[in-house]
Image (cartoon, rainbow, N blue to C red; front, side, top):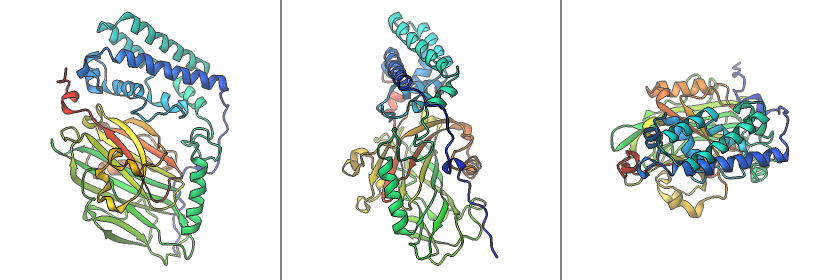
Length: 432
């Protein structure tokens, strides 16, 4: 008798909660003030840069600093573009913003470039208050982030009492209704894609999609794992290039019927499947080389979508951009009602789809260069991501990662992780 391997891989943090000391209301107000102060003072400092150098690459040249440091600084000061609303837990900001040593490097470099002494003095005072806040919570940025991450933060564990995400209780209720109505659900919908220049006009992509911890009651609707809209500004990925299922990451013997509907690859679970769950299904790799290069295109945008078709407790979408693309890019995230009458939705962003945009803003994490050590929701994440890079014949050190992570994503919704790019003359600094 066949016995499936143990359920996957979903971290035990989903099953329980680790208690940790909570900051006081005064601490939270102080942290919010420090965030506002850092953003404001360093935004003023960056305005001293020549107009053609106000990108990550330009700042790195102008300040003679490393590009990742300038990227984090620039993204943190552009709060609106970076999708860091005030309601987000302060830990989200401090996770992506440079630490004290990095900010001190920026100050020294700006001083060497002759930035106004008053601007430098104000920025230095903001850094000193940031250092005091860090000292308040144990003397390290890591301890500060841990202390400011509430236990009901949606990055940690879904909770109906989350203060960081007021829509979480409603989405959790919708998830439970959909799971009951459809007779099945997944613990995690995972989507990973990497993007790199193919030539001056086009990008190539390679991606993997997974449904992990699948369960289905007898008589429930067939579960469909769809790898749609991985790419932007292109037709759907060629199903002939997909290896389904991805060996080593699926429950052995899982019955799957591949289908192609209007160029989109679907993988249908056998409706008569009686295998005990939870089951894991990972599909890929999916390739495409039909995407316009946003660095040279008249439309300097890249839209990376994932469509939710199965009730899932979590959605994780990771995008790895080649460093040449990550430089100067500004990420954002949105959610839209799905509509088939739009043709290829991946061609469109907020400007085209604003009538369908949902009043919910997914949050973004900057994973940084190379691969993250793990994902808290999937213990084999690093191994799976490494497999993707191997299949794409790509070096992780050449990429910068971004993560959109949504608890209780809604069925029938397209979640988009988008990137806006400067025009070509702004990127190379020739606009000055």
